[in-house]
Length: 300
Ligand SMILES: Cc1cc2nc3c(=O)[nH]c(=O)nc-3n(C[C@H](O)[C@H](O)[C@H](O)COP(=O)(O)OP(=O)(O)OC[C@H]3O[C@@H](n4cnc5c(N)ncnc54)[C@H](O)[C@@H]3O)c2cc1C
Image (cartoon, rainbow, N blue to C red; front, top):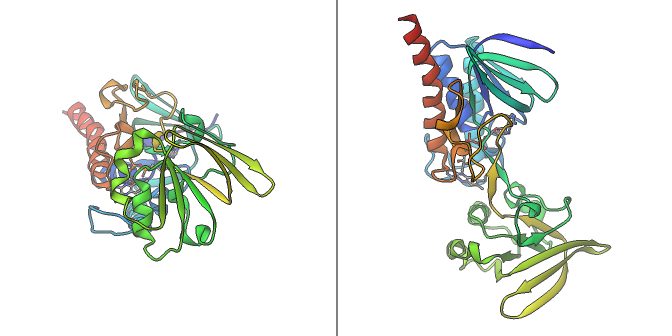
């Protein structure tokens, strides 16, 4: 087992919350190791249009670049180190916090901020849809070039649909959006877009066939319909990306007040409400302040 003992703070996840935690820690002269499974701002990089973001960034790629630049500056100061890897376990102990990575490394510091965000729901996570595990990527990870000229079914009417359409106003796409009753209230903001057909369904199954993907949809009013499409994308909502070892509530999120005192959670992972970039940044910075003030108190 490979151990590292020398950081004041570990940060898991380099989204807006994790980067804010690392920048705050470094600004307070704490040393900090940031563990990221993909790349800085991995989620942001697929978001084509942003609103209400500190700094006024209007695309996710631009914000992700700015976050990477902030981290790089603190790396140059010698107080932030970046580590590529996936955290598979976090734990708080007397006097230290630990993070185990998928390659067997175990990192130790006086506290850890976990900011792993949320991840897209797959058909297996919802009661109303069934699909093969391959062939159902999240809508918001797709570009206009991926979808133009294809017959596309979207499963679910979650908010990324509106974001995608705003980000690609010129895209010549036609989306058949099959959504459950629970998503009906989210369809208002996209109902006028002529590139969509919105279909309320009780249930949908997707099967791989030689010519593409066969959709069978059960409509509450008109019964069962079967048709074949080129592409099926998921837009069914999200679930917390909780790292094992965190205390998880009944809704799957990780309440901050239930964690070990050396394990802090920040950003989207905390709860379904207030999932915004500004909130994630404020949260990450505040999480890094807790171990700082604890250490100051010990110093007297
Ligand atoms: C389509 C879409 C549009 C949006 N539009 C807006 C908007 O206009 N304005 C706004 O304010 N908000 C918007 N949001 C919400 C915003 O993106 C989130 O609130 C914000 O990204 C949350 O930041 P976070 O740091 O908590 O998590 P994330 O940004 O999800 O970052 C989590 C990071 O952790 C990494 N990670 C996950 N698991 C592990 C692991 N086990 N080990 C290591 N690393 C891991 C991920 O790769 C990722 O980089 C939008 C979201 C979506 C999906």
